[in-house]
Length: 87
Length: 214
Image 1 (cartoon, rainbow over the protein chains, first blue to last red):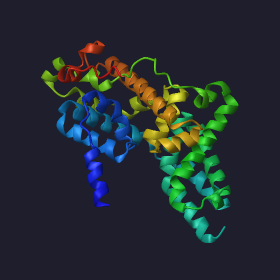
Image 2: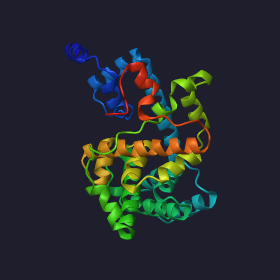
Image 3: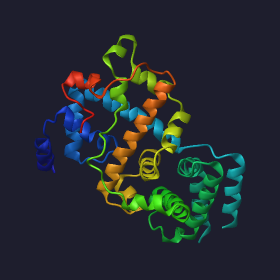
């Protein structure tokens, strides 16, 4: 286990801005594997420009996420409640 | 079905109703269709509840039923546009990704504040809704599944019946179009002054790279 962690750390390469921006959305979507995720984090810790961009995209994604929740109108909630009672 | 099954199902549906309704509203784009979509989803979910072996997967399973129900309705009414969801291929030679950040983050604007911050503070939910609703179906559905419903790429691929690479490509293109629409809206609303050319981004000038071009 310890050896694997050491190897993983050794696998982390320095990446440039172009590569970081190419990976940005997959990073924010948590789709990168451990090594590639760590490479992104390392780059974002050292590059102010990419960090600012990442923060912006993260917040915009958060705002979009809030569209996924909308209070159900009371009469519709009542309709669903009635539906559930019939099951 | 036992009383415990029934109680679990009812509790989960009640707890997720606002999210189900929100997702349905963005998919169907109007209240009446969204309500029918949720009602049909709940009915189908109950009918198939016995086949769900791991109840920790209930949420993802339920939202997949919601999306598939929406897609099968679309196939009845607009078979051509919805078939594109399964058939359209990556478009590597298409227009480059549009970055709202790069448009907002221009050196001359930084004199009087932080325009990205200002944009995020001022953009209204209805502006975001309008921008999502205006996306072509082929990009709108993956964006909703990823950013609004929180599905991962594999789940989106399974829901739409396409490879993961296609999901990635459509998300990129969908987000690019979404950001372009938000930028145009910001300009129309006077949130921000004159437009910039592609090469004027401050990020590009700080790093010596043109980040929009890849």
